[in-house]
Length: 165
Image 1 (cartoon, rainbow, N blue to C red):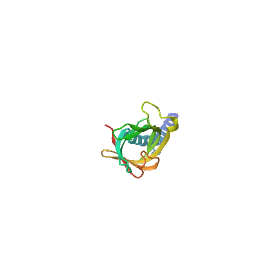
Image 2 (cartoon, rainbow, N blue to C red; image 1 turned 180 degrees about the horizontal axis):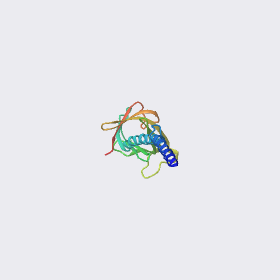
Image 3 (cartoon, helix red, strand yellow; image 1 turned 180 degrees about the vertical axis):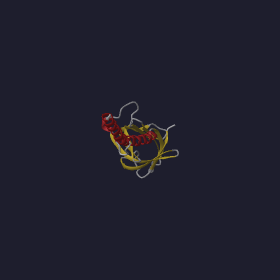
Image 4 (spheres, rainbow, N blue to C red; image 1 turned 90 degrees about the vertical axis):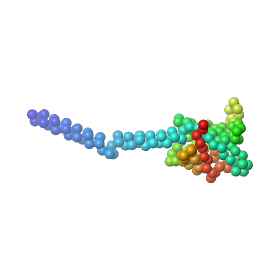
């Protein structure tokens, strides 16, 4: 009888210790769950950025309009093109994008666009830029932060993009 009582006492102590570890707030399981939840929030924010965005942008020096098209894919790839309004694409870029702390990071490479042909290697250049972004009622506001620019002369200017139709 003493052996059974001792065995029950040891088993109940192990059960108590095991349960108390699982319920501690600093438990790794809890931390992993919290981390997964914060990653989910980031995924939601990122997925909200995904899609094709477009706008018409006026050049201040010549008052000509450009059409800008920025395509952000869920897999982290990106494509950016622009050209004169109601005309053909002038330059095209491909690369990657990411988001952190309200900033959009674009790492692109491209150059002059030739219909049906790849841009010659000697005409390619990198376009690495950072924009602060905010979602607004009808679109996405980009404000230049650092690096290259999507459009020459746009430093300090807001680029307001709408979802492509």
